[in-house]
Image (tube, rainbow, N blue to C red; front, side, top):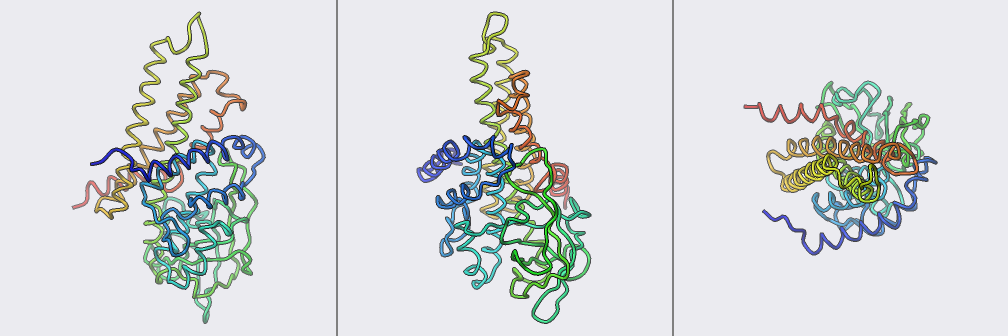
Length: 379
């Protein structure tokens, strides 16, 4: 049991923190206001190794661990939660190709993805298949050396801009066993995109439907084997849950630091806010809960890397606790700021809008409880 970071981990955490401070934080408010997708900035992050964090080195990846990734996303989210979260999605999609793809597929797509010359989206959710992901309806019917796709995917980050779409589609029977994983490239005839969604937060990344109308995708784009798609999706989500939890931690830490500084400056009733015990206790609880969430998430990351028997349950626990805690801490930080926290002149309201969705995506926190309870009660 080792709680200190290694020299290497400290080094890339420092690099990620500096990138967040210099390249993300100064622009995050403008990106949020203008709904601007900072692709060129993300390519700068890719040059530091942050676009293929746990992809193998032979295709340009950094070959780091899940814990390393958590440290990086925690640091990046302090600069811009929404952009860091998109980097997490890109990493997850790239990892699926790296982990389950054939060598020809890895060498075809991953060098461009790890440099972010091309960017990737992950397509699982559908209009009628959210938490019940195994009920997805998008069909892929084999026709010679192609699959013909019909259906649609909903709430897809990067939709319309991304070049690569890692899609879960139905090639067989109902339920999880009939799901397969296909890579669909932008520009494929029959692939179109819905209108950009107008969202509460995560405004520095576009979100829209991906629509398939008799889209012909080569059989050579099948990742893994037919019927393996749901397993690929769920394994990807174990890591995705860690990353989104880490993004909550980083945002909450920034909010806590902002609140702490504000309490030392703001005066009411002739004293600084820091002199009021009620607010001292509030700050103490925020820091304690955040530290507990951080330790749980780091442990889950180690278990996912080690393929521990309880890795999926631990990832669900960490995601549920880190995202709930992150939201509470940000909300309390906003409350400490009073009316100023509600203004766009301060970052707290953006932090709150951005972290709220973390309790919904990568599996809702209610579904996290289902996963945890199922594991606890199984024979």
